[in-house]
Image (cartoon, rainbow, N blue to C red; front, side, top):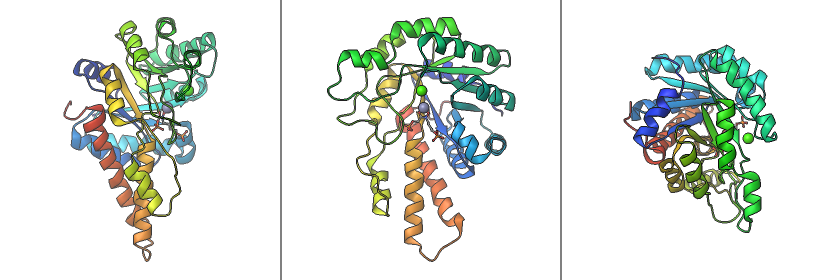
Length: 309
Ligand code: TD4
Ligand code: CA
Ligand code: ZN
C-alpha cells in the first residue's frame, strides 16, 4: 500500500454517494488514532497537514510518521497540504512527497487567485500531484445577513465554473456558510444548500470540498468544561447538515476541531481523575483512543465511507 492521490477516491465516492473525511495531523497519537479508525472502518482516508502542523512537528517527522502509518496499516492514504498560502509551501510539500496540496488563494481577488492556483497546478500536475483550491470566503451567515452580503463572501456558482476551467484545478473548496473553529454561528446554524446545488449542477465532475465541517459536539465541550476547561458558547455545523451537503455533492469533508475537542476532553479527564499519575502515556493513550472513536463516528455516521475499500 502507498501514498496515493485523491483522484480515484473521489471518483468512487462520487459514484457511491459518500465523501472522504480529511483529518488534520500534528503528532504521532493523532495519526495513529485516525489511521486505526480508518482501518477498522475499511474506509479511504486523507491525512492533512497545515503550515502550523509543519512548524509544530517539523515536516520530516510528520512525513515519516505518515509513511509508518501506511506501512503498518496496509491502507492507501492521501497526504495533503491544508491551506497552502503561497506557491513556495506547495512546492516544498510536492518536493517532499505529498500526493495532494491545497493552494488557498481565497484572500486574493478572483484574477490573482486564478494566477496563483494555475502556477501551483502546473508544478503539481507535472509531478503527478493533485491540487485543491478555494473560491469564496469561509464565514457563518449571521441571522440578519442580507443577500448582498452572502454574495460577497460565498462562492459564486458561475465564477466557480470559470475558475475551474481556467486553472485546471482537481478539486474546489467552496464557501456556503461553514467556518473554521469552535464558534461557527451566532444564531441558528445554517448552510446555503441552494448555492451548493447550483455549483454541483454546473460542475458535476469537480470534487467539492467542505472546510469547517466540525460539529462541536456538546458532549465533548461539556467534558472539557467539567474537567477544568472554559469553552463557553461553542457551536458547529449539525452532523445532519454535513450529511446533507455530502448528498448534494461534497466529496471531501475537513474535520479538525472535533478531534481537538475529543483529544482535549480525554487528556483533561485522565489528568484530573488520576492525580498521582505522571506517565504521559497514561493520558496520551486515552487521547489517542478518543481520536479513534471520533473518527470512526465521522466515517460511519457523517461522511458514510465505511466498508468502501
Ligand atoms: O482546514 N481545516 C483544518 C484547519 C486546521 C488549522 O490548523 P492550524 O491551527 O495549524 O492552522 C478545516 O477546514 C477544519 O475545520 P473545523 O470545522 O474542524 O475547524
Ligand atoms: Ca481560505
Ligand atoms: Zn480549512
